[in-house]
Length: 69
Image 1 (cartoon, rainbow, N blue to C red):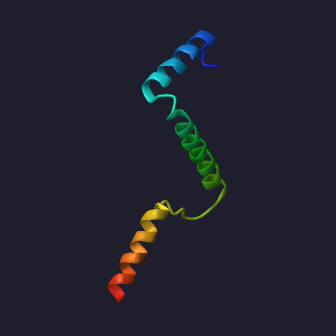
Image 2: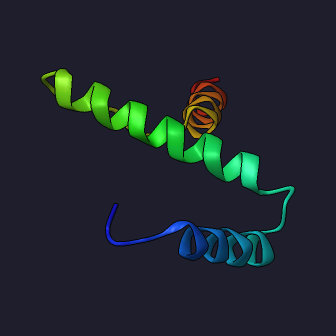
Image 3: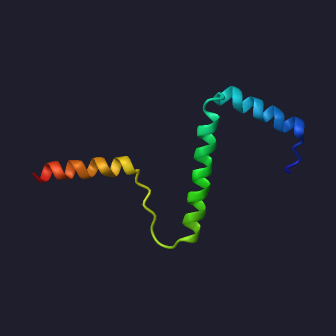
């Protein structure tokens, strides 16, 4: 695997833990997993993908509703 042995992978993992901290690693892993699954889903589907965050969309709808009143 890319010429990396067990010792090199172990050193890389130690550096990652030091940089991000042990508490952030599950969040990073979850984010990477979601990104990969979204990428695969996007490749399979045709058409346009809405990348607007859900929270932002709800806030804009509330603003539009208030302006209309």
